[in-house]
Length: 595
Image 1 (cartoon, rainbow, N blue to C red):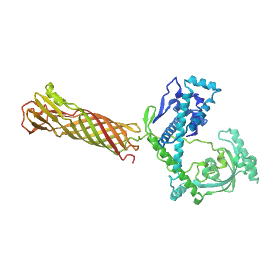
Image 2: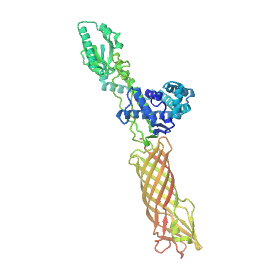
Image 3: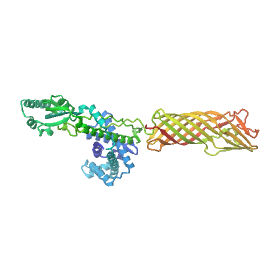
Image 4: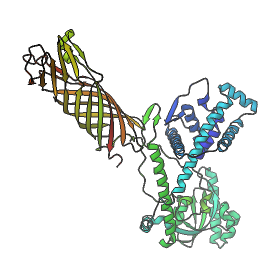
């Protein structure tokens, strides 16, 4: 956890005295949701203010570049803390009440220090419409989440030493590509302080002092004595100004440029970020590979471990449900950057672990900032050009008007619910993450329909086979659920359709036909595995499919002389209707996702 977040939480009393989301008189708007955790607008603004406070900076205006940068940092830290705490829960980490209560009490005491007396603190709670128990519970929830995140991060770090393997060739390649980082110089300094923000008079006075001492040195004065008398660099003054052998990457860039531009065994004045340096250069050159190989290997291994840690955290973030300002966003980690030359500070140099006394005082403490990675992919969505296979069973609420329209009230027709069923097998190709097109094969069947009229008894049967083309639009709802809209159309054939007449005589007749049909539907996909490759599919749809003008043939018995939809002279009254509502349950398999 970055120190500025901790400072911001301990300083809540400075801006609003108490967390704004606990105020009773208003309902604070939710700004950020991560799985089951949320950050209110008030909490967001408090953390942004703390971001600037820790840096001793004036809060930036909302909407400015600095403000947006701070907001991204706050959001990213909150997302990371939540997903790490969830990982701790999955690992069944136990956090003692003592650990939590100790931090809760510390934070409450920090808030109290912003009030003159205990009574003023209690009055403040009362004015905000909250109780001390409310404040403690909210604080406890945040502290528990933070402790969990810290514990699981520490656990993961202990697993990393063996994750980054660095070969000798990688070490050699790094040395060849970054020769400047292994330039060395041995020198001594006498510093006359004058920061870039100092007045012109101050800088002129410092430069004049440096010129005077340089003149004395050129006349033969002892460098160590002059350094002990005049230098303002506490780290080197007592050593007579001696810095020792330092790598270029350990130095302030401006100072390094001046020193490495001097001739060996010469004296000169070099300007740096802290003022004017009188420098005596004794040696400069490039370190031998053998002397720095081990430090390069250590640097590369630490970089690899850091990358592995970040990749692990990014994987946790990618699985999280994130909603910002009421909109679902998806997380995609930035591609890992190649290991580059260290930044120009002593602490980051792979060549040495010591900080140059000449730059120790001039280097201000900085906090590493990270941007919220772009939200581009969602874990439930397929990769472009990947395939999805679906097997689905449909229960059908079909109309029976194909008979009722003809027979009217003269017949009694019964058919058991759900009136029919269907089997569907489909293969879909993802054009991008949200659009799929595919083919499917369907088998549909109605349940037997019994018709009794005027002493006649009939049993109607029908089944349908057909191929179809379809398109789907996928919409992610959270980290484990998709909603999709689909539209399909195809050409269908009657198979096994006909009627059996058992009275007054026995007779069997078959009918044939074909027709275009279409289906419009909506489905919910509930993923059943952590890799988001297998989903349970629950769908609702409406089918448009009607067979008319159907030819018939008698297969047994003899034609009987009574009106029938399938026995009229030209067949124009015959109709078998498969239009109606369908409810489907299936399984969907995403192939090649994440490869």
